[in-house]
Length: 127
Image 1: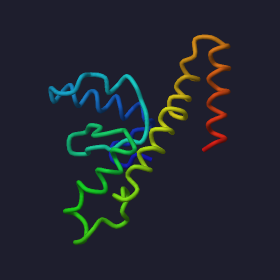
Image 2: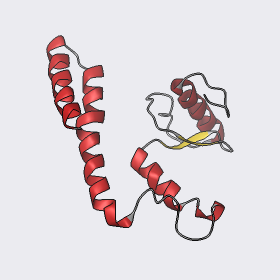
Image 3: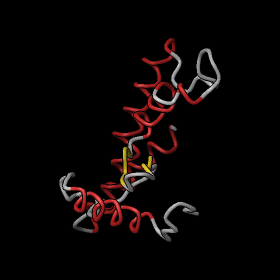
């Protein structure tokens, strides 16, 4: 549940962000057109800061250190020694799973849908 804005849907959050961006005179107006999760929300500005999971992990691992205990971030969400592996896995997931879902949802024909869903399930089985 959204306890900050009391939005009932992710779409409502994106529409709120688009309206706030317009009021503030920034943004490109696209915030209210495509909806995805996760969402990193700026509750002071009322806008979406980011909606890409790897970026959010990096942000939480470094940009908020001033609010945590001294020392390295705990837990380390983006360990340096695993960065190459994290990026490889995220690239594979993005290409085959995330885009696979979009290909199913935006298929213009039954044939295109069948091909997309078959490919998606092949990759889900590998995941």
